[in-house]
Length: 345
Image (tube, rainbow, N blue to C red):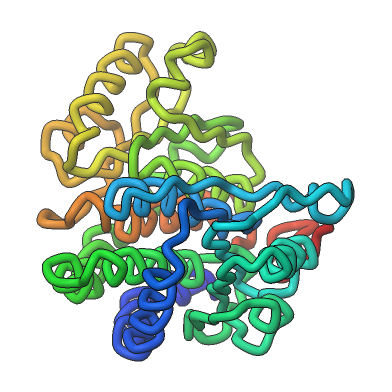
């Protein structure tokens, strides 16, 4: 088993540990946020962490009524033209906590008198030192270049913080059930090599998700790019239909992320449109009708609340990407030209 597969299978335990060991820290940070009453949230991140930030846009918007924007770190570094962050909650999300541009955003937040929070797997990192509060992921060493367990841990940390800001209750109880649902998800998606083999020579994919799982579309596409070197483009259904759908014709592979929830009818309708164009459909879903329409169905367990579904839905996508790399004769642990820590300005 590859290192990245081992780390994929660690994710239920990582999340369970974060829920246990991070609860008091999350409560402390949430209390501080309520005290400061920020008007909006700015998240600084890169790569997979940037995809976690896309999840936060829906999470804090839907459940905490806070608008969330993604920082433009080069304004703080290359352009030396940092916008004012006064009145914001500024969150830096980074597995390593070592990218200078992300650190620069949190340093600017502190200068502007804003609350700065770091979510990182390295609690002694420069990012952590720049923050007022640190929420460690506690994922343990992640040796594979492609991030997996630190990504879902970042989603979990954001979900815990959102629930705590809202007062816990039912949402906290839903979080507690999630590690077992992740184990079920992994059990439902074993032995994908035969199903994935038909895409051995694929050169492009579209990956589609909406709402909370818009982030999942970006993250699954990134994993496919990193490990299989193909062109995988993420879209929402609306964005795909506003032009890019023209490139879809017979045999074009499309991976649709469609768990139960408010956006499921929209995604099911899109699958109909793609089927009319004879696209090759792959689906991640718990819905029997959606799975039946797909050439390859990647199953999710039932009962996952929509706001937490990205933590489960990304797992089959990770496994699909790893199986695809393997069937193409590639090493998913060591993507060419990449290193575990990328420091950008």
